[in-house]
Image 1 (tube, rainbow, N blue to C red):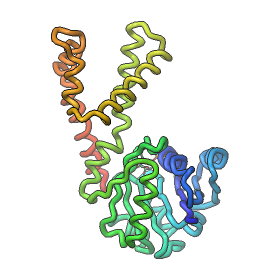
Image 2 (image 1 turned 135 degrees about the horizontal axis):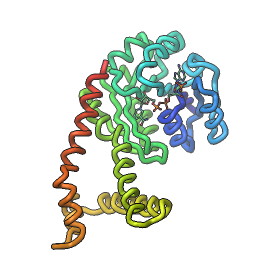
Image 3 (image 1 turned 60 degrees about the vertical axis):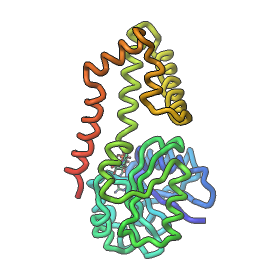
Image 4 (image 1 turned 180 degrees about the vertical axis):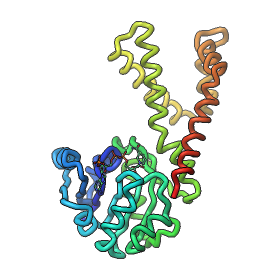
Length: 265
Ligand SMILES: NC(=O)c1ccc[n+]([C@@H]2O[C@H](COP(=O)([O-])OP(=O)(O)OC[C@H]3O[C@@H](n4cnc5c(N)ncnc54)[C@H](OP(=O)(O)O)[C@@H]3O)[C@@H](O)[C@H]2O)c1
């Protein structure tokens, strides 16, 4: 039995803990300065709250660092004395490099940079894992891929691709929900109740994603299938093109990547 400890049990930390909760062979523990976050986890999953960051570092084999990026240096400074070579720190902080993680943890144990996304909460996340310069044994690499593989897809990525991955997949759920909300507003505007509109849009996205996933057709062919000549869909799609929705989505992802580059340290 290995212990998986989380420091910072907010949105992402708790999403990962809840996603992993059913995994056999792992015990879960953690610390957050917000007691309500710890109480909610203790009530919902098999989770032992601890009293400090250092307690987590002492108790856990895998230490997930899920505080905001500007807290990472302080937290690693606090826990460094409790780290030993047989432990692994996994940081999900956006923009905090492997080199910075090693420096802040005083190279006391292997460190892995990871970029998750929130669908991890329902076992459908995508995780980028950086093992470059992580000083990680093959056994630890396999174990970490296996852990994250149980709550989604774990991709081993070069660190230079992290900002691009973050802009696409880390931020991606926000783009998808933004688009979904817009379709809900349109459905309410044409007369559906908000509840019916929301249920319908969730089904719409679920079904479209399943079709894209299971079909061997290109996405553009799937779109063309809906666009009959002189029909209603082509009128809507032409409006999206006239108003440069596709170009704006591309620019939004590039903005996110640029912001990630500016924040990188
Ligand atoms: N949310 C996402 O979709 C997403 C995606 C990819 C990566 N990430 C990364 O995930 C990390 C966490 O993001 P989040 O959205 O989960 O933030 P969050 O909801 O604010 O969670 C962070 C939690 O850590 C707590 N905390 C702060 N300092 C602490 C300390 N010293 N010891 C213990 N707990 C402490 C915070 O408490 P207070 O509220 O009191 O500060 C908060 O409860 C960030 O580094 C972010 O870059 C997030």
